[in-house]
Length: 162
Image (cartoon, rainbow, N blue to C red; front, side, top):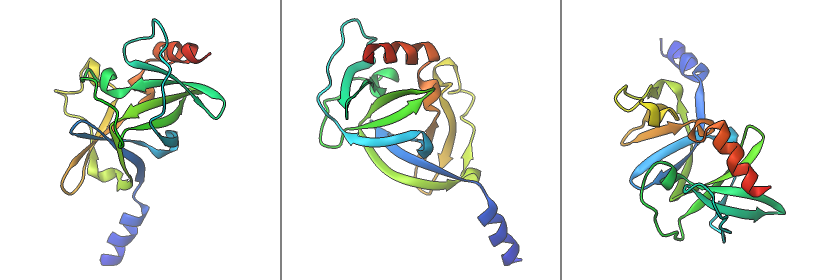
């Protein structure tokens, strides 16, 4: 009997996630979307950019737009500190950086410990929440970064870097 359980557990799909914090909340994103994680660098402001766009940075010769996830989620701005990171991702062929308060760890969790977000939070503003992960002593909000910004917003951000 234990053998069958072991076999089932080993064949269960594992999600590989990068977890990060914004305020008191912990979020996770698919590690395959993440190109790299860098320390905060000097961001060049761009006139007339949407309020959630901090500006652009030069990352090894490539100019990429930087999105402040706090602002995108309607939270107050926070002073950048030694824990602030930029998660560099590629979405629909465009490279973007997302500012987060801190990156926690890389996690491997079974899909079985996740469930769809409660319908009360699954409104228009939360379409980018794909699931809630129930870990031992905490909840992890799983994000679909491709939905955090609409395709039009991704294009608009990419135009700032052009």
